[in-house]
Image (cartoon, rainbow, N blue to C red; front, side):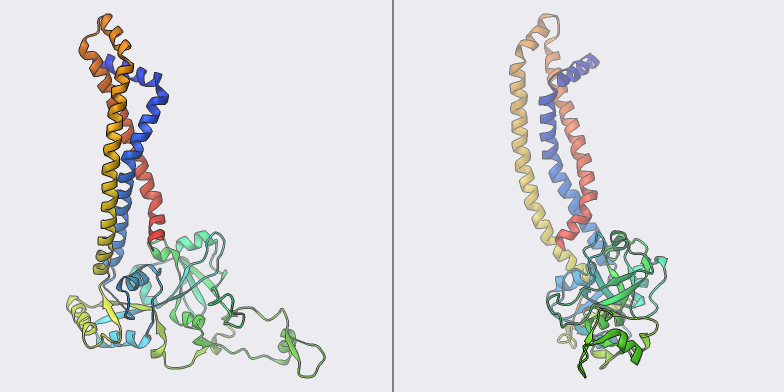
Length: 401
């Protein structure tokens, strides 16, 4: 008998397929929205906790702890102030940890489908720390070289041997420093992290973009004539189109690039401290909480991220409350629709009983139709939530940071 009831239920739903589709879609949206939000938030929490847990300590200028951590982990926010390279030297010389400097202030110009990427000036220790490997090309070997994250390389279409310009500090300052033309020497393997969206250079290259370092080009009389025009007036020279509108470091002029001042005073936006053990980590936190508190701040990224996630969880609770209210209203409307459907189909049910159908069969028929619609709605909701959680993860991180 159950087989016959299922057959009649499917035929009835197909006969009223327009109404059935509308009911199933409404139920799927009501069930799918809170489930999608939960999956997205869960994925986001898992990813941000994993990167924070893999980073023992971040040291930077005093200010917002959250901004400092997001800057060191995601290269997203801009720090209010910079520390100096001397602070990194202090940590390394203390023997408590290894300091990996980060200089994240500039971006590249837009290339291809990419609007640009953050330029991360660091040292080779960063690649070992994050487990980053070169998939194509080589590694950083001289000033002006850069490595591309896999996602940025794909969106920009750049390959090893191509060149990439840094964005000028101020597009409206015509007298400002020229951008740096960097040579792409390699592309990193995908790491499924913010490193895939960045461009990495040696920290000294970042200081050259900053304007701290520069080179000198020795011009012969012949090269000067090629770069400058004269209008015939003695002492009057005008630069022609041969003067490059950017700075470029080549094998011929790399030796002329130098820095003025003490490297210990050069700026670093933040640096990652990798303690030798838990005791060294505790001692380093203690020093920055006491004797070094005026120089910089030292934070544990995982603790700061937990504070951030606590705020995200409070927002999620609002979504949950809204989902409960929405689900309750939808449930009442669905019950009303089922009741009205039974009333409209009263003559049909009466006919079934007159031709010999048991009274309980009509109830089983309505229950089977309702169960089929709920099952299809739940299936669509779960499928849509799974797709949204995968496609929306990158968008969620970009929107939050």
